[in-house]
Image 1: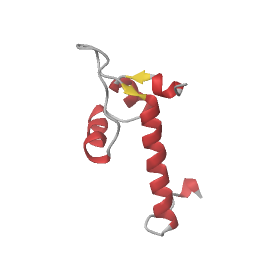
Image 2: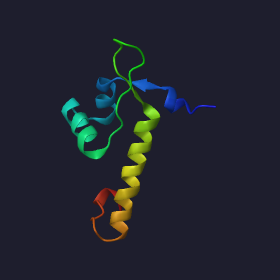
Image 3: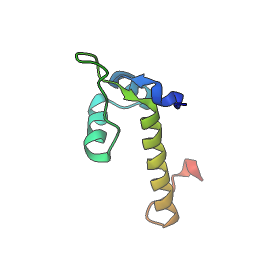
Image 4: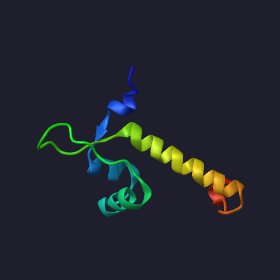
Length: 81
C-alpha cells in the first residue's frame, strides 16, 4: 500500500504557502539543496511535487542539523534547548 503523503501532490504555490517561503527560495532549494523536483502527470498539466518526498527531504535536513549540533559544528538555537 502507498503512503498517503506520496499520493498527495502539491503545486509550487501550495508548497510555498505550506513552507512559508517564496517561489524564488523554492527554486534555489531545488538547485542548491536537493529539494524534491516536481513531476508532470500529463502533457500540459501543472507540475506537482509529492508531499511524501518533501517530508523526507525535511526530515533529512533535520537529521543533518542535529548531527552537526552533536559534533559541535553548529550552535543549537535557543528555541531547541
